Length: 517
Image 1 (cartoon, one colour):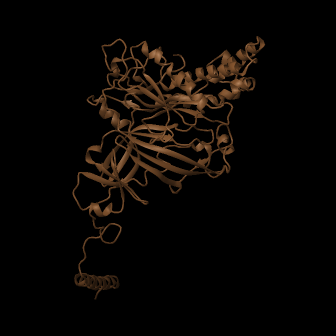
Image 2: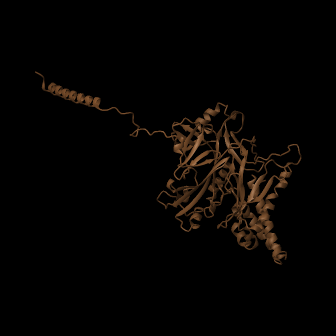
Image 3: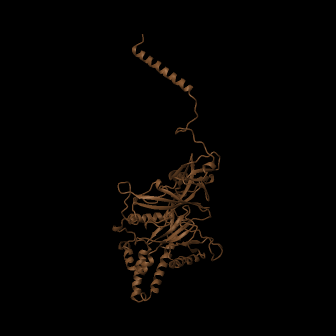
């Protein structure tokens, strides 16, 4: 006799055997299927390349692109994988007067890599470097990684090709660069992104993107738009809830022209680019190196005492500049040729008018501009400096100068009001490195200015702050002596000469010189 407990276990074993046998029989009778994709369904069949890009506009330049309303396909040659490439973001339109036309947002070295079935776009970390042949290089790469800012799956094709097809449509989202600081309270999403223009040139790919930003109030993850400069954005808009930011992204070929970096020296007034170099760090008193930001000026005849350059530094005068002021802008900018002649270079600087029907845009990386800038902010002084720089060497590729379009009016009519607004604070005069209690917020902006100088972005210039006081004093003295006031010609001459000095000053910054030079 089987005990009750054992009898129960035996019954369970019989039932389990019957169920298992039935399942195996059904499985054997079922028709066999091929392998399935991880997400279910049959694997996607690879299409011929010609079919994938069918009905797309073909663009040929530094890269080959295929564009449609839905896609921008990049046909990436294998030789570009892992090769450094420049990426610069430039603001096409000003945001009220909070930013400037053509201003630099970011300038980086990037690289495209293939990882599995994806293409990764990474911003190179050039703040920490070592000689590629040095053992330090392994540690530097492992310690200070690049920043992968975009990835996209490779578009499969049926042919075996020496290039990779990738869809760039999702690249130009607001996250590619920080167009607006979160502190402004304005945000944009990928759905607020529109591709306006694509220009594929021999040395650069330019893509113009329009972003629709909307303002988040406090408590919705937004910043505080009603303090300091942030308030100026909202106050300059017809509807402060929304603004459009238009950005040109330039992927450009980095120069390979034998340019030699020049180590910076604090005794020489020039903008510089700094990084930490671990090569031979045990034999130096500092790990940091600084390269001057400078143009590649080479004499046509190196043996001649005075020779023109192979390629002059060329500036274009903004077509928004009033015609009566353009000659003065050119004359003042060309004053710098006297300095270059002292080092044996003749006509180093060239100044031309921006053509009315120019085929190029002012944000093109091959054209440097002298802008006639408008601002509703009386505190705006000036802005100038290198815009696009090879971060590896400090070679300047593009620079802009921004002139205050209201300055002639200040010198002619509003000099006393302007001098009162722009007069330097007594705290700064007593201690130029102090931070006045009423201006603690300036500390952050000063730090940002240093960072901008290091990255090759333009810096704010406060030259007009002291210059306006000088102008007001000079006018009062000349008027009291009867020199000014008798005829408008003398007043106009006074304004022209003051404006020329301002122009030469800002162009000097665009050439790479700082205030102590």
